[in-house]
Every structure is written in C-alpha cells, then in structure tokens.
Length: 357
Ligand SMILES: *Cc1c(COP(=O)(O)O)cnc(C)c1O
Image (cartoon, rainbow, N blue to C red):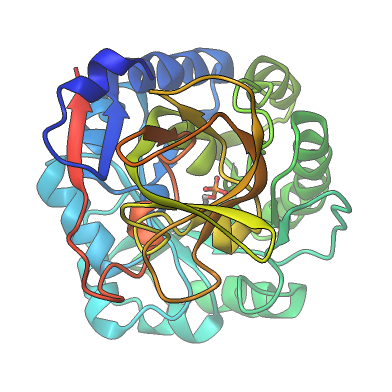
C-alpha cells in the first residue's frame, strides 16, 4: 500500500483492493497446482470486482448458500460452481440444476436433492490435525455409516451421479500438514469409492490453507502443495478462500483522537470493527502501516468508534506519535473482513470501496 493510492480517496474509512496484485497472486497459485483444480470459496469475499478479477485464473467458484450461488451466477454468468454448505433448504437445493458439483452433507439432504446432479459426499473423517486453527468437526459432513447409507441410496436415485468425496477437515494448516491430511483422506476415500463403483474418483480437499497474520509477507507453500498432491491417483480439487484474497485488501482510516487513560494510550480511529471484524474473531492484532507519521515509537491500542471494549484492531502495539488526521492502513483485510462484519451496529457510515486497477 503506498500513499498515492490513499491520496486518491476522498472519504475514509475505505476498503482498498489491489486487483492487479490479486490477479498475480491467484495466477501463481493456479500455476503451482498443476492438474489439481482450483475453485475459490466465495464466502471469504464475494465482492463482484474480486470475483471478476479471480475468475479467469480459477476453474470455478465454491458457494455455500443459495444467496452466494445467485450472486456468483449473476456476477460471472456461465462459471462452474461447486455448491456446499450444511442445512441447505429445498429452495436452495432447487438452484442446484446446472451446478458442476453438489456437496451433499447428509442422507436426508441427498433424498431432497431433486434436480439432476453430480455429487460429492462430504466426509467428516476422524483424522487429527494438531496444528489447525480451526477443526471442522461438528455438523459438517458425515461419518462412515452415513456415507455408506448415501452410497446405498444412490442406486435408487438415477438423477444423481456419485463422483467422489469432499473433505474439508481443518483450516490454518501449512503445506506439509495439508498434504499429510490429503494423503490420509485419499487412503480412506479411494478404496471406499472403488467399493461403491466409482471408476473415475474425485477428491475435494476443501480450503483452509494457512494465512499468518503476524507475518503479512509469508505465503502458503503452493509449489510444495501442488507437487505433493501430484501423486494421488484421482481427480483433485481444492477450494481455498482466505489464502487467495486476504493479502490484497486494506482497510484505510484516519485518527480522530488520541488519549491516555489509566496509563493506557488509545488511538481512536474513524470506523471500527463493525467494518473489519477479523481481529476480533481471530483474536489477533491486525497488521497495519502508519502512512502519514514517523518518529520514535511507543505502545498504544488502536480502537474504533464503537461503544464496546471489544472494538480493538490491535492492542499495545508500537506506533509513532499520532494525531487527528493521521492515516493508518490495516493490511490483510481482503478476506473474512467486510463481509463478516456487523455493519449496522451503531449506525456509523459505511466505508468507501476503492479498486486499484
Ligand atoms: C470456508 C470453507 C472453505 C474456504 O476456507 P478458507 O479457510 O477460507 O480457505 C472451503 N470449503 C469449505 C467447505 C468451507 O467451509
């Protein structure tokens, strides 16, 4: 983020998306994955400009609701879609006609899927990923007995074709941990699919590639991941979100006030975590750059305008001397940022959106 981009902004706070940077990043991922298909998980950031920037460099888009499905179809007519998500309603399932793959989450959902569809069964396999930021256990996917029940049901459902298994088991893993998981999934799923008569099996390993908010320059090792997947004898697909769009969005805002109370210095910024909820949900300090000030640094807590002590972007972080009007750009705000935030809380104005082209 350089100051020139920010000088063009007539209103703060603003989200700034670096579309050329995003395009380059996604093209690199696509290149590293070889024959493994790359779908983008729209839930990370379904912004239309972002979808249009990514589309030429991915094999399709993964959507997790009827709303996302409709939005992505309108934004990218003709794009290949994978449709997942627990608790799909009949209305949502009715939208599945023409979707590339439907990820079925339960035997009941399979029975309710009335349109012709190519199906992946979502598996919840008991594989441990000790370093995961988030383990996707709980209501996602099926145990072996429910998978068996689905496979048995498919014989009576000629409008459906079983293509393979979907297993998004954990998130926040580095390439070697992700590969380890992928190989264990394949070891279980390929014989299982063979037993159920699937000759050209497919595996979807989901998303969850690690993004390290303490190190904005670090990237998931896509070349190692792509190379490590190459030996798995199946059609492969991944559907990352965060690791694709996190790095090319900034939330830029300015200082309203600085004060010291009970020994703590607070920098109060225009806007708040109702625009950028990521640091609250992840429990981290959002990385940032001060664009308009330098000098000796001292610790301060960066907060927004909300009347809650939870409205913290970064706690006790070193900052140069700051005053009203100084501009700060929070980095890594391109995924799970604006679209997961509670915009209406306190009724402050919404941020502007600015696209570097
Ligand atoms: C959220 C999700 C993804 C994307 O996960 P990231 O951590 O953003 O890469 C992919 N697949 C499924 C099924 C998901 O729920």
